[in-house]
Length: 204
Length: 204
Image (cartoon, rainbow over all chains, first blue to last red; front, side):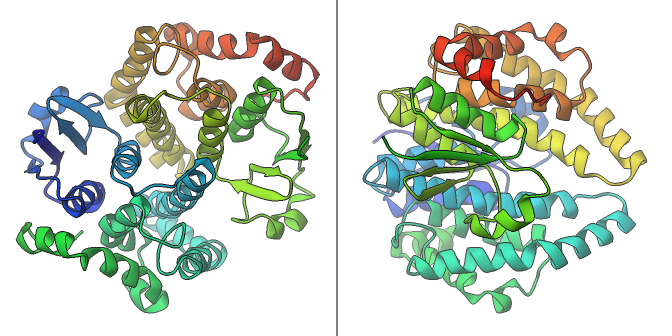
């Protein structure tokens, strides 16, 4: 059994996506949660000075989307050809686009600009983008791509509560029930549930 | 011969990598540069209301990172296995991370906040991140991964002038000559050069 470690902060977010996928595939791993206070000391040991990092038998894998795609292809959670792999990537990048745009506004330091930019998103971007995301999930039987479970769903589920924060939409569950349903469906997978039941609880 | 079209603005930026890959692959394509006046009419026809879009025989492919990976795999510019593909993805995601942080400054509304964020990046992030990018390229014989030409290099070359603009780091070419050198390497490939010589000129 390879020695597998997931290094991340004591949060779910991008680290959780990797933990859930490993759990789903029955891969034992050390869930190494590094407190923010300890991070400055450990930072230089990580290939890009960031987390999450996946370590398998001493080899470090960085960059969450690269890791998830790798694990997805390794563990039968990707497409059967280029066209299918493309579809997963396409929908994943659309999803990351949505939270990145939300994130720019969420992290805006100037309160007035933040409010103005949020109003802009709510008026001109979110209605289209979130409706599109909802359509994609419905078209794919409650999944992000290919009408079935892929590594994209683990990204979605692990990030979901963090995304709600970045979008500044606490009522996202009610507006687009398909989103929470997808996140829940991943957490309901028996091995994912077993992992989550024992894992530390965090807000996002 | 499939009918291939690349829809993008009259820029290089995110569309250019796709054009360069198609040129490399010997794929004839219509280089459809959509002006800002034309865009509102065309926008609803695009799957995610965005460009670039690659269209092959009526099928639309969106999300530039997904498209360049797809073309890369199609044209033998990817890895021989998932470990190698992972390495390409890791370098690309790291590079994309740098761009995302730079864009956050662009999105900041307030001039004071913008200046503050830029100063923060120049002090605490760019020195490390750009040095790391430089190391990666040097370690890989002037490429982004695997010590040889991959789709990652096309993405980098196409975006480079836009990247420089977004970073707002003066003298980037002089500070890290490996970056421009990589761009030049891609544009020197005969089929790519032939395309670029005839293509409309764009600053970024």
